[in-house]
Image (cartoon, rainbow over all chains, first blue to last red; front, side):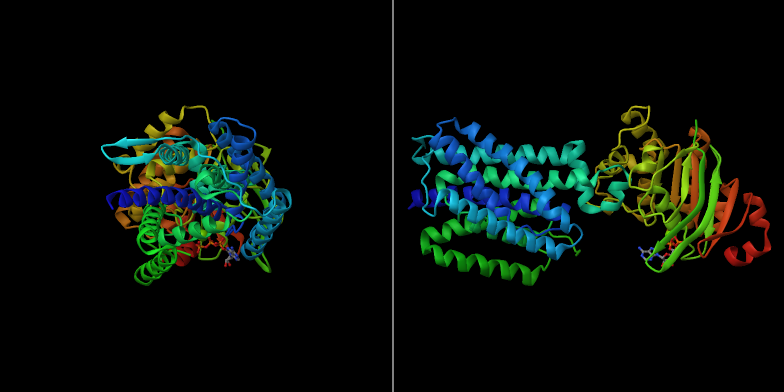
Length: 287
Length: 237
Ligand SMILES: Nc1ncnc2c1ncn2[C@@H]1O[C@H](COP(=O)(O)OP(=O)(O)OP(=O)(O)O)[C@@H](O)[C@H]1O
Ligand SMILES: [Mg+2]
């Protein structure tokens, strides 16, 4: 029993980290470009495939696979901003529709290239830690630590570098940021590239746990959406709380009551929070 | 130190609305120049057009004889910084991060740290609150932060859009004194847009009165303060 509890808590933390990685990129892209990016989950999917081919097929070390997913997503994200989103700049609705189109294209390209069957990715490391009877698979510990390192680096970048500051300023007041020399035409592709890269690294990390197929992006996208709404749009602390809450609730409920109960509980929770606090747990009152 | 500004025959339209029509004015290096006028006269639009934040249909902007193009960042590169109407702080960033955003373009001779210390000397209150979110500052403090943020760009020309807006008279007097000090210490040219004509004309060596997007009157600060039309329209006497 206690083993089950520990196990489901660990899984909850992993889910929470996954949702957080997804939600931060999603909210960053929304904040900068004002586009609800429905293709965000497809970057997760591409990251999972990238890791699969680099690690399971080509036999490269895992950090190299993650770095590859990062680099590939940065380049792809910047190109996609240029080709897909730039024509619709300032038109939020068209931008959103373009992102749905992009999601369909990416998913179907993956389907043509890799086929519909789920591929299974081997664990990164085998074995388990045994701390006084608490048994943790090493592979899960690696996923947790890796995600936390990436989140910490990203947080540092956003809060303590000149470019990170410019991105935050742009989110809050585009005109004034531009008046102080922030170049919107560079920051848009950077924002989308970073969002894509966070999603792709999430995919690369989670591939061994959740599998690899053209359809794996849907759930993380939905959960990112929920986290952003639950935590409050644009709030990083809100996103941290919401994603951990979501991950832990989902994992413990599904361990003890089954997966469909977990979904019901999660959505009931979201509705309850929004009834009490329409702008989310830590949201700002604004459009 | 340079900082001569010359705006000629400026026209700005918002759709069918002609907000600024054929407006010309100039400021010598190191001068404080006031632009006053009623609501909707086109004061803010003029400053935005200088900054390249709204499109100029016609007209030119020159800084020290060099032509400034009509796009965001162009005037900044020529040493023009704007403290915008309504302050427009990045509310969910710290005071210090707001100030550092002023220095984002990285131009100017002096090291950023030194300029930051200078801003904190002018506005000690900001130093106390540097780690606080800018949105939590009082209106007067936000105004100081907005001026400080503009100073961080090490401008040759500092443009202030209604620094007295919505601020208690005693703080307005404070801010006026500091604007005067900054101008005297650094030799920066100041373009001061105000509805508070009293404060602006007392500070300024030259003033322009805007009406419906055009210059109606100009003169030294004292002349305008003494002008019966100005007194009637803007000072209520
Ligand atoms: N973004 C905009 N879109 C359309 N019209 C605008 C816009 N901004 C300003 N205007 C119009 O342009 C004219 C000049 O406005 P502006 O803001 O420059 O006046 P102002 O002199 O700064 O007034 P105030 O003292 O109230 O700030 C006004 O008629 C205003 O309604
Ligand atoms: Mg105005």
